[in-house]
Length: 212
Length: 212
DNA sequence: AACGTTAGTTACCGGTCAGTAACATTGTGG
DNA sequence: CCACAATGTTACTGACCGGTAACTAACGTT
Image (tube, rainbow over all chains, first blue to last red; front, side):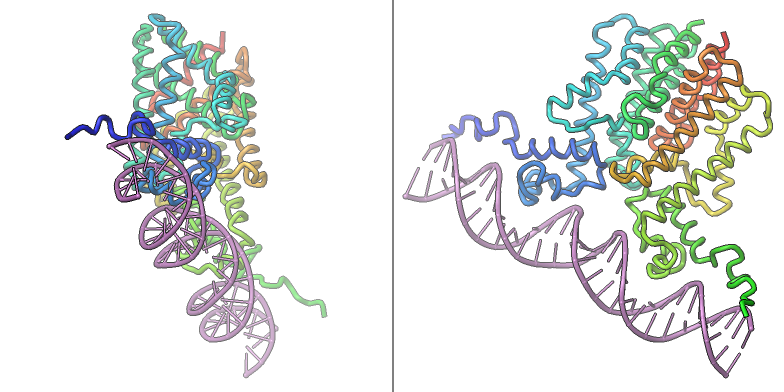
């Protein structure tokens, strides 16, 4: 009677068939490389090997896709964060230094290239760049970015506290400024040709200054 | 015979009557507040109290207006830079500290509001934000931003050298990262609610660390 | 064989984009 | 008064935007 064992079981093992994923992948690539406003849904669908109609069968609107793009990038950043600090568990200072060093590490960019991203050079923080393009009345997207940046701030302050800084909030914020500045200037100075090349030394100096 | 004394002398004392200036003013305001791609020439012309046709009589294309917007903002930034460091001529450290302090000084924002800018909150660096929106093949606009950021870098490194830093290039770059990070995070954290509140203390610590 | 799901195709909607043509209206200077 | 230049007005082009309708082809399940 109520047999229906799993319902659409092998075509979509968990939730989505595969067109949706192709679209999201293409969107992540195009949005990151060219910006959100510069990429239309037609271009995304085309890049995904499908068409606009199939796009709107998977996403109610472009904004929904953008929201998913942002949360996707956020997930990716946190995964990278965790794997960066994992080897130095218990040593907050080493963890921060690893995070800062990863900002000028182009190896993981190559890793991203392998898994499909066609970026020849990093364009910094996807969420931060999105903040430039998101209109101020769009709370839905704006909040995603705000929550993300707030979490970065929280984590860096926490690490500063763990390493026994005299003013952990100030140290955490200072480290955040360095990293954000690195992302920002990456847009203008490709790879490590800009001021980001000094980020590791600067972070060490800041940490030292906050440890009496 | 060849009398023609000055030709269009009092309506345009130097070069332009006044529609052009109104358009440029409106463009600076709208571009800064909403981004370049988000603002069409119709909206600019309308805000300037004129129409699209008069716009294209003053500017060959939107890109030309954008270029002028960017160079205009750059001029404004350098004027602000010079007036900020002027009181501390000869004392490079004080000059840098004044520059950094001006990043969290909302007074000059109010000054801008008086002279016509309707921004209720700063949206950071106009040139840096433009870098997010400028397509990578647009060298004309990209170069404007690149030259501007390069000049910032040069000036900060020079100031670091003047204050006798052990590694002036590294200190200059570190200071630049702090400031750029401040501009970047301003987009997400209005006014001084973000990590930029720690920028003065961070800059002092960095300078101290570089002075043996 | 009948069915529902997933996907591709084509054509279209209203709106906005950058940019232009042709014409009417000012105002100022000689 | 006339000429000329600057400005305003209306209407338009062609392209693209986000979004939708209607139809068709492939597929697995029962």
